[in-house]
Amino acid sequence: MLLVPKLSSSTSSMPSDDQHRLFRRKGGGGGAAGGHGGGKGGGKGGSSSSKGSSRASDVAKKHGASGAFLNSRSSRPFHIPGIKSQFMAYADGGGKPTVLKSDSAFIGRQAGGGSRSSIYGTSHFGSGYPYGGYGLFVSSRPFPFGFVPVPVSHGYYGGDEYLNMNDTLRPGGHLVTAIIHPSYNSSSATFRLTGDNSSVTTVFDALVANCSVANSSSAITPFSPSVTTWPLPEQVVQYYRASSFALSLDNYNNMATLLANAPVSNDSSLPQIPDTPLPLGLNTTPLQCINTTIGASVPLADVNPGSKFSSAEIAGIVFGSVAGAVLLCCLVSCCCSKMKGEKPSKHEKTKYNRFEIVNTR
Image 1 (cartoon, one colour):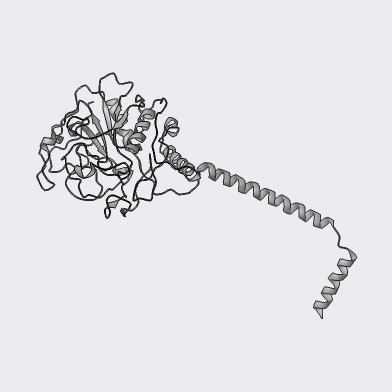
Image 2: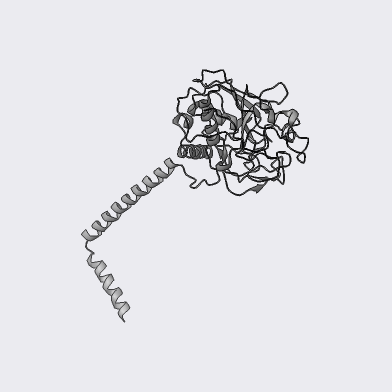
C-alpha cells in the first residue's frame, strides 16, 4: 500500500493536522546500530550531569528505547534558553507554558506546554501548533515545544525571523541537516532530517538504533537555506513539533508547498492545491519506521521529573536504609543483653534507695 499524505475529500483553506499527516505505525523498529561519532555540546561535568544522564536514560528506557540508543551520545539531556526543564529524547513534554525572559532571544513570548501527543504536524510549514496564532505563518508565534520553527527557505511563511540565529540563541544549537539512508532499502531514496543540532543528533541516533539507518560521522552537516540547498520546501513530507523539525525526501516534489505558491501574508488566501502523492515505487517500510521513531524520540521537555535520584541511586538508598536498620537492631539487642547480665553494686543500690527515700518524704 502506498504511503501518502492523508487528504480530505474537500480542500479547506487551511490544512488540519490530519489532512496531510503520514500514517503512523505503532512501535519502533528493530535493528542493530554501529558506533556513534561526534557528540552534542553544552554538557556539564560533575554529579549533576551524571544524574541528568541517568534520568534521561530512565525516561528513554521507560518509553521503549533500545539498548543501542541508551548507550549512545544522545542519552543525555540538554537545556534551552528561557526554560527551566531539561530536554531529552522520549520525554512526554506537557506542563504549563512559560513567558520567556531576558535570557531568551524572544522576550515576552510563550513557550512550552506542548506534549508528545501533539507532536505531528503536516507536510506544510507552520502546521502542528497546539496553541498560538492562526494560518500557517510562523512569525511572532509562541513556541509550544520550546523550539523555534526550522526555516527551509527565505521568504517562506514568515520563517525569515528564525534564519539568522547563532548557536547560543537558537534552542538546541545551530541548524543542521542529516542524510538518512536505510541500509536495507534497495531503492535510491534519500531522506533528510532538518532542525537544531541537538534534536537532529538525537533523532539520528534513534534511527540508527531502531530503523537500520546507515551510521556515518559525516551524515550531519550545517544547514543554510537557499534555492540550491536541500531540503527545499517542496521536498518536506512531514513537520513535527510545531514545525521545528522536518523530514524530507529528495525525490519528492509537493506542488502545494512550493515557494512560488506560498501566500504573501497570513491574511492572504492559501493555495487551493492538493498535496502531491509520494513517488510511485517508494519503499514505505523505512519511511514508516523513520516517521514513527521521529515522533517518539524527538526531544521534548521533561516536566515531571519525579524523583531527583536515578533508579540505581534509589536502590542504593533502600539497601543502605535496610542494612542500617538491621545493624541498629543488632546493636540494641547486644546492649540489652549486656545490661541484663550485669548486677548493680551495693553502692549503687544505696544511692538508689536514698533517692527513693528523698522522693517519698
